[in-house]
Length: 152
Length: 152
Length: 152
Image (cartoon, rainbow over all chains, first blue to last red):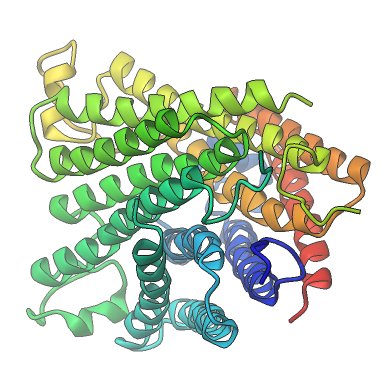
């Protein structure tokens, strides 16, 4: 059994790399969506950005509800997707069962896509709460394996 | 001497994995604390969340002082714990002395636990400033070793 | 051909470690800049911080324009530099061409330094937009290579 876990020969690592990168790209999509919302609503945060406004009487705002919804979604991604990738890097090093690991990665990624949908469509609660909690518990499950396997 | 630094056979890596995961889990705890504060104070940020409020006349708020304190604490964690883990990954690759590395990891983790206590208990300054600075300087110490060892 | 990509023997990894650490240190500089701005303007976010104020009649504020500009810059760093490092870790594992990889890392790092300058000097748009977009596209370019190479 090889002790090289961080190579493309290890399918746990390649599966993790795929779902982590996909989740980070989804997170980065919130930056693009913020820019689109700011442009479409002339809702800019900096005085120098007003030169981009369609309506030349626009003023800066930090409280446009549509822009702020995307920004809260983005921050929630940072609070959840970044921990998933960081903890997952160590989780891969604990040589988990291939299928168990794959389901962790899949469930996390799908939970974050559904979370974004519930957030941006403002679906009735507790839909957003549940999708967020599923991803959160997935990361905690990986973290518990790391903490139990690498005790100093 | 092995050049495999990212395996459970390298105690620098296992120590790093332990303290990094513990720090990330502590950071994730702020999400749970935010939710608890929002529920206990009916202080929700989204209109659709008001269905969860105990007081059915609650309105959305972005300025509850207790919730915002937890959120500032959470953001400070992101600003400090994420850099620690990212820089630490490269630091482990520079094959540092085992004990020197372990003390970096321990001091960082303890500084962040104390930082959270000073923040949530609103202890007199400069207690919070000092705990934050200790973790910050620990990460910079690791970063300086990386930058000196991997100069392109 | 070695399959060990995460060692100091692999110049793609050392180049990535250098530019990633430099970018994270730049990001951490925003914390220091926030503290300096808060101190110089007596613009504190927590009641217990007012003991640090020069003017003893200062009150807490979450809306000082200079402090908020640094904080928006810091958050933009988190939204862009953290994805770069996370995606880059997997990108290094795909064994990219040495020079292609190096230019990705260089362009990203320089784009973030220029982004900070355009933000803090409030240079006319679209200068900030362009610097941000260049770094963003660089990370997406690395992500596309990862997703194509590690398909589950």
